[in-house]
Length: 448
Image: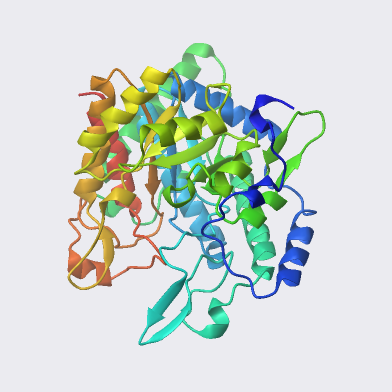
């Protein structure tokens, strides 16, 4: 048994402190669903996981940039070809902007095909004097506020697996079919791109890239290879422990265990305690792992997490996704950067500028201001540079839909605009044009 899974077993998480789990009324039904799930085909492969880890190692070494993005919380209704392709279009557009501006390859990780469980601040939600179990994501229960909908249903674990499989299958089919061909970026155009304030700049960039490819192919006297497809990886918060355990398996001709439900699981702030069952379960897998960290993260906590999850200090294994808020990052990020240096540990540094900048409007909407999100990313880049570190990526909640959930951006959305197309079930997301604007802001700051 290697260092990674010393004193670890597939169910050793049950001996730790179990947080953020649903209370299922029927244990027999839960066991039956988990047993069936454990026999279902995996969603990803071990060689895809190893390939991603190698690319993340190159991010850690400053040779690539990580773009991780997608919905705050997927719903089963999102398993829809138009929604999936629009998400993919936005990530492809953003990655092309980043590749062109940063002059380096981009690792694309979708925050979808499994983001069906969400942590909650309380087990119960109360409305008009009635208390019901909190909505914990479609993997657990339904969002409608009635007693039947809020009862945790084990059958939803199997629906979650099927929805993830269909989403991944469609993404793979699109990519293998030439959807991601850099020669045809018009495939990625969203119907409303022309309304974006950055549309002209984006189209000019596309023209320059197409002309460069054409010129290179004329010089080479042949069609350039490896331009028709891209690598794409899935991620989700590894929150529902029974679901994650059922998809954690050994594979032939490989050592150890792999979480085959996603390429890149991450642990959130609510479940990253050293005594956490979530840390224990992921301690035994070969996947690269994301860890959310924030202003609350202490030295002992951070070093304890890294020693538990990456005892051999392997490059690409750990991605630290820092979320502070624009007003707290300058005070807290340098401390964590220098702490890792002093202790001799390496990790990918990734900025989540969304979760520390959430606020409520006067008319009751949960939102984020685009300028605060942008400012946190820019400050993160500036701080890493000043500390002789490298900001390797961004982690964004975004959508390819024409939503109005975050304030500001090119069209200067205000509180009244939120009423027009506020569709999120949990957290506000950047819309298509705010996402593109964010990619361009990253490039501009990088090249300052």
